[in-house]
Image 1 (cartoon, one colour):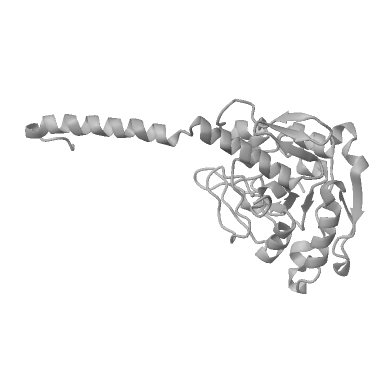
Image 2 (cartoon, one colour):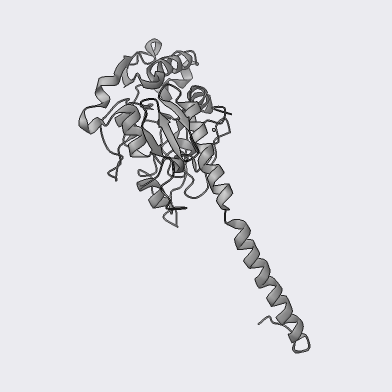
Length: 282
């Protein structure tokens, strides 16, 4: 057993005390100050206003101000949340708590790194309409999907120009070599009013902001068996050429999540770094 020699007991006590002090200060350094927390919340507000200028007028650092005058708090005061609570009860600022690595190569994310999976229901219901109440359907538009490849139209929302962006994505994807067909057609879907599998949370598809590409070469964490630890074992076959076209138009990719869903793309421009400066799955 390792320990301090008898002749250096006093030194050992001193070193132990020094280490305790360092650990104490280290904990203080690791905890964000009030100023740092306030700046993080304010930055989330700035990025949301930059991402959705048609609907958001301003942010005063604590609230979003919608163009109809509605004030929506950015932070619920609950502090840092465990991952499950972050998903189930995110405030508006929580939606930007994890950095989305747009443009990077595909690689396994760290544990519980799921940028974009947290969606504040009040924010999305106000922006796109509650599909359960029939509000989202009124804003849908059909978009021709990969017409050169024989794709069928998808329904997505008109709000924030999502339909136009999906049309632009389709046009770019249609120019890819035919070897990409197996990843793109048939598409797995656009608007569907449903909850996320295994939860009661509204899917991004229920807001008309998501597109699932072909499932034959897609991977989804709920379909896969975990390794020895039982945790998700990341897999992906979707070419990054496809991912980068979606990201170029403000869509995030579910393949960048620890709880991966590689067929899934959704319009979340607030998470793409360039903004303001950042089927059965989600």
